[in-house]
Image (tube, rainbow, N blue to C red; front, side, top):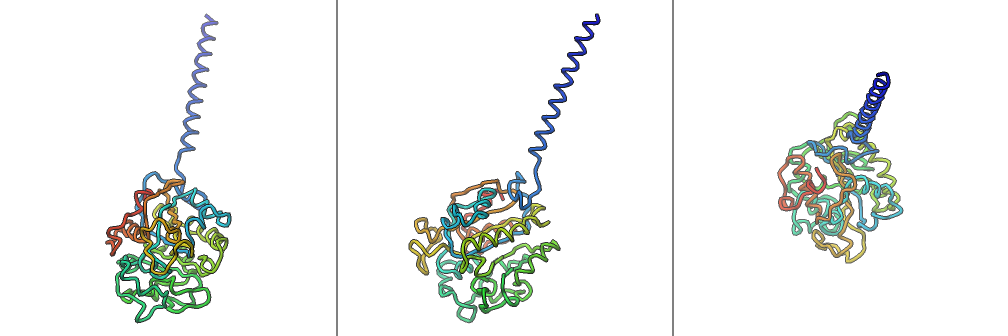
Length: 323
């Protein structure tokens, strides 16, 4: 009898250990699969399904083709972003040089209507447009322009290039003096959780790599992007960030006025474009042909806006990057 009781006790004890072990393994599994809050250390893949994106941020850089950034030893931060978030591997500018791309991307104007901007002219009677733009579709917006000496500045100054500030070219746009501001305003808006629906960020001529090196741009991005990723707006799951370039490097068949939107053979038309959001899967890749009109269409779709011009027929990036 005593031996039976001891045996029974042993079986119960063993069963208890198995149950405890099972519970422990379940807790461990749950802890490893529990979603994290998006932040600079884990910017993407923290949400399986996209929430409602209320903030769209564009960061525009200058004059570098896909191969000048992806795989470059001078761009470790960019390459980490490509591994941690999303990269469009078949993304294209509209033409060359800079300004017509900025205008096309924010207005949807077709190739024939951006010819007047091919000289990279400063805003004036022969270098502006009354077209509608993403800035003026009724949502809140701001342009954050690094090194711009005064709000809505129409003139080049030091490392500020007005041709990289598209808002000032729209003659019917209201609020430029209040909403086209120096880059320093971004930190205040992030701190006060007052990020607008649409933000357009332009680093200066050194930091956007126009006059600076790839290493300069990489350094700027590694210092500045984490502030956005650690902000309340991003951690809440309501913000998506797109980082792109106006045009590719002066390589291949580069020519002012070139048709680049669907040109998959010229490396000067092929850009690296990064997609960063809590719902974008880690290491997401898309070889779908996108261009600046796609970027416009995507922003408008996410913000519930009507699609302007060429954006109305452009392929959006929402499905490819789980937005």
